[in-house]
Length: 280
Image (cartoon, rainbow, N blue to C red; front, side, top):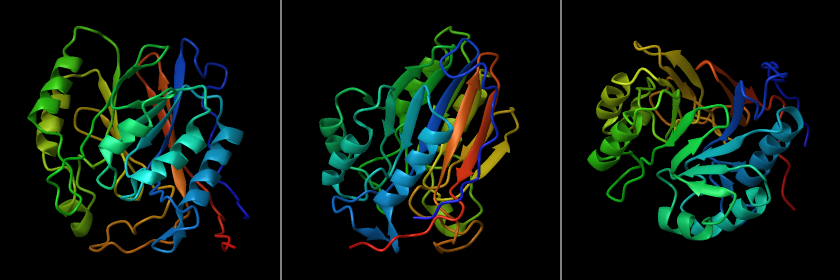
């Protein structure tokens, strides 16, 4: 496997990780693992691609304060959570999980109910960030769209109105904003407007980050909230395309540095030059 990586720019290396000024989270999304490690999805062997991303992150960015796996961790195959356990189970940092539309949440919670894994909920960094893990999977989804639902929106409202002055960051799976792709936008977050209204009432929310779209996005909203979409470790879809056309972009992941003053430094890391190695 020949890999030439896009080297991330060092971000305040003297202050992170785990220090008082900065906390680092590495995000992997849309890993689409299957129980058969040789299996492919749209021509991509998903496990080697995840391992390549993880090995690059370990070499270039570790130690970190947490790892986030933000949905479609498996591809409709609950047995593949055993692979997740093997790959991430021995880490000594929190592994933050949220289910995507291809996940099986009951099996995820059953098989990954032990340390270092945490499914959903809230994570507090050592330097004072409130990281909220929203679950947009819902049982009635017909084609892969997402929904948080009134109860989770209310829980988010309560968490953000809890009186704390901590800066807040939100992870979810489905895009809360249009991705300028008809096929993807039909399968977005059905109650995105409710989520965005809730977030807009709380200025301490500094960023929201998701997957699902298999491509990258990084923009600022009207309330100076940073909205970020992270590419998949598995394979990408061509941006601004009306259909689900597979792109030739390599595997990717995101590094997020959360500074104690509320600032966010983040970028996507692409494994440029990644070459698929034939199985067998």
